[in-house]
Amino acid sequence: MEPLNALVSVSNFMLIPALAYGSQLALGALGITLIFSILRFAHFAHGDTMALGTAAVIGGTLFLQARGASIDPLPTALLAIPFGILIMAAYMLVTDRLVYRYYRRVKAKPMIFVMASLGVMFVTNGVTRLFMGTGETRFEDGQRFIFTVREFREFTGLAEGLALRSSQAITIIVALIAMGVLFWFLNRTRAGKSMRAYSDNEDLALLSGINPERVVTITWVITAILLVLAGTLYGLDKGFRPFNYFQLLLPMFAAAILGGLGSPLGAIVGAYVVAFAELGITFAWRRVLSYLAPEGMEPSSMMQLLPVDYKFAVTFAILVIVLLFRPTGIFKGKVI
Amino acid sequence: MAEPFLIGEAMTGGYGGADILHSCTIAVEKGEIAVIVGPNGAGKSTAMKAVFGMLRIREGKVRLNGEDITALSPQARVGKGMGFVPQTNNIFPSMSVEENLEMGAFIRTDDISETREQIFDLFPILRDKRRQAAGELSGGQRQQVAVGRALMTKPKVLMLDEPTAGVSPIVMDELFDRIIEIARTGISILMVEQNARQALNIADKGYVLVQGENRYTDTGQALLADPEVRKSFLGG
Image 1 (tube, chains in turn orange, yellow):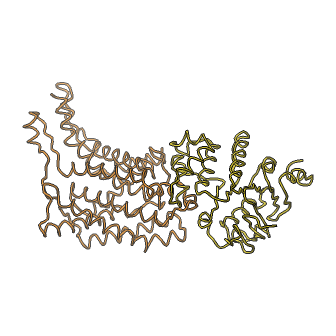
Image 2: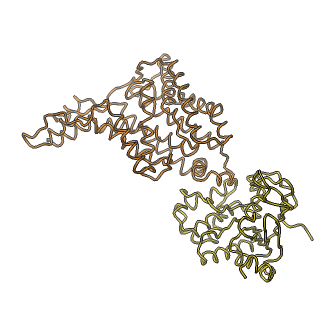
């Protein structure tokens, strides 16, 4: 039973958390890749917009809880997501009107857009802190575990335990559904195809009668949906703290670039690679290896390549390596 | 004589700065092929873009079927029945052949399957490759996709900017055959060509431009037979 114990241990502490984290990153990275392929700039405000979206969902959750609404055992926040999406779609469209549209009209260089999005990032960050403060807010309610370590141990009789938190399961399921719907939208609907056409060849799209402003509007709305989902799932999983969302910018960009900017499939693959790399390299493998190593050869150290505090260094290293050796990413995307 | 179906009359203008076209006239009759030839930098493509509204002309008029369309945007001209195939970047490379055609028909709200079948009949190879990404096709096949895309709006005039640029002579001959076939269905063709001799061969009307001005204008055959034109522009 030793290999089985190793598998259970690695699943509990690494695989399942990485799968959930990767799903959250994937939804964020999809937004980045969509904005890059349609509006053609790196959206630096992504992390903070995600925080604001989550704040809106938390607001909705508190309102619903006060009214006694609940979908127990699921968290009330899921019920508040449509409200968050509505707020964020409006916020992003207004931002586009006030900021980005002008730069589109004067055909500004992508770097100008990036700087503008940096400004939007600071403003959004301020708005979020105004409502939420800088501390941590927990808003997960409902049933916390699908099964706990103890239940698992009693059920299987293994020495190692495995827990599956509701937030993790919800994250993975919601992310899969969202990705499926997104791919269906992009490949099967007229609006989705017009987005891909615009991303492929702007001038020809114009000649074909595709309205660029409409494509841009659809892109912002889809991004708002993805952002609110990603932010809420991340918040349910790890608690809400504005600064953490800002920090997510790095892994999300690393995922999008690793997968190939402009490629939705790439963003998803990249997100999981980044998530597994971050957790795998900062994971203490001693327990797992002691199950697998022959008698008397058990490792005495923690078998941890890097302390957990350095997980963003892993992402940063991935980013640098990709940009140096394969700037187009796995799926041959565009180069920044 | 009745007015030609599409005419850019006495067009003068350029991309801001100095004028490139100087009182240049280009016209095409219904169901006929008109070809613009001339040396490099003669303003061939510019003349065509002016007819399509991609650059502002200071003087002159563009009329389609008697209607003055000088002030219309290229998109509006597509709506009026003009199709344009740019020289480069004329397909959506990551989209399938079928999706390229579908995007060509974006402004249409009726059923497009009949037009799509007509295009597959015209370019049978595209039917075989309908699910393949257009960017993965050969140069000649891409041009077929590009022409097919422009035909999806059921245009009355099809404008082609050097359709045979960068394809092999065999493919070029085949493309010209297809273009003749398109003209036979009643669609007027206006094209710019580097391969002057072959293009004039199939042309009902030829325009030789030099420095943005009409130098010679005649039927394709007459231009081919003209010793002056042969000596200066067709290499003897």
